[in-house]
Length: 126
Image (tube, rainbow, N blue to C red; front, side, top):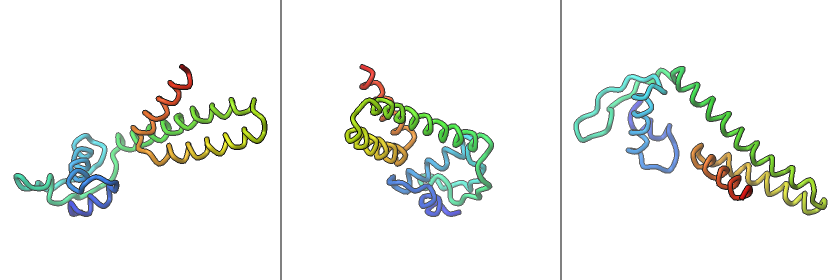
């Protein structure tokens, strides 16, 4: 896989070089099993990647992130309990807002979602 193919595989809004560096970091940290052909000094971090797949550690990490995201959504779902005491029209409107919030949370990166939900929970509990 060429570096530009890696950048398109990673996706997101970051510049291609940042995506390539992130990919190399994931390989270096043992999350992705890949052999990288050494890049040239001052150039890209690698000239070619032979990707085998995710490592056991990579699979575990992704699984934990998924469970973590589910836990965050559960925290938001707990807000729905408070809606139960409201009149039906307001409750229905609140449920729509919560569903939109859950969609929004799922669209965020793991770190952004965690920070967002933790801030909401903190503010609601103050």
